[in-house]
Picture 1 (spheres, rainbow, N blue to C red):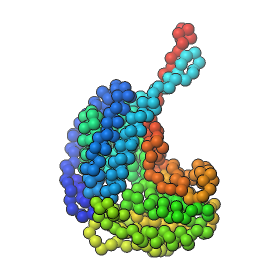
Picture 2: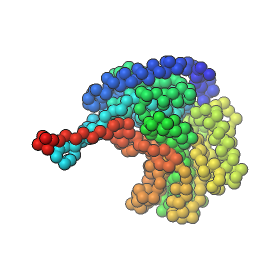
Picture 3: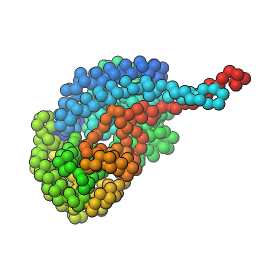
Picture 4: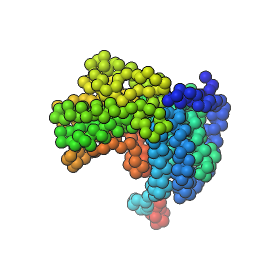
Length: 462
């Protein structure tokens, strides 16, 4: 296959066809990015920050056009697409405001002199990114690394190729030097060659844990650092003293946000016996009221999944879970309509050994699990190979905060609500959800050389 054709998942109509790059074109693109990096790294951090801020402004100026493209390519609700662009602009704002300080030299006392810690850019960083947030997944690592002084390569998911190219145009319209952010339209074999290229100094991937293992192994063969943001099966626990009105509303939003296709969606809902029956009744009522619709209609609450094969995989996971004892009390079957649609679904009687318990269900399917008490709920929440996000509902905020900080084996925890990503807070996971952090200043230092410089006093140096 020498071409990629993007398809609207709501209408199943082709959008655009793109030619894959030749191997020579890929090598030349990596070289051009490296050449641009050699100039960019010399610019003061304050100058780089000005360009980053301008990118945020350019994103806002192109919000509606970009949002419409994302909705066509991956079926996101138009309102979610607009919010995504706003989030990316806010990431630019935060990075521009805080980047120069985060990357400034630090001085430390050393025997006989002054120690200096400098943060030096290392070169070209290669990002392999998924389709669920066509703008955000690319911006998240690209802006941090551009601020740090690195060059950036992007291999975007095939079904949002147009979004990757749109982002490149936005970056360059804002004043980013040509080739410093380069989109590679390539296949997996070519991607391996990019990782092997000596000019590529680091690799970051957002995707499944299976993909993470493959990419990390290839990078490891070449002694290159990786940052991996992988899948999850995030647990939201409803404790005995939870406010059920708050919990139910947040759990519906948390499961269906982005059509249920987010690594940090709420996926498992662990409810203590005290609240279980009431939660299930109210949660099922709200989920059953969610109707499928056109993602371009601002009134639609649930659009299509991004591709037919993704929908079919989800349906298969639901069917297998039901065969193994789960019950679908809402939804649970593929609708007879055009598009990659799957209904809001609620599974109960979810147990270990079922995909709904063990694996990530990447779509609008909620797995409700009954716990004996608060302690049992915490145990079940951590009974997962994943560890990206999670949530706790309790009216005792101090206790919930302590449980979140000390007991939840994840990278992020929401208390009495649902969150996805906030520019000034670190984002990332543990266990099979990956390693490394983005946002909050952390991402700017993932791919830099923390260099020690020893400046000795004149009399001691002699």
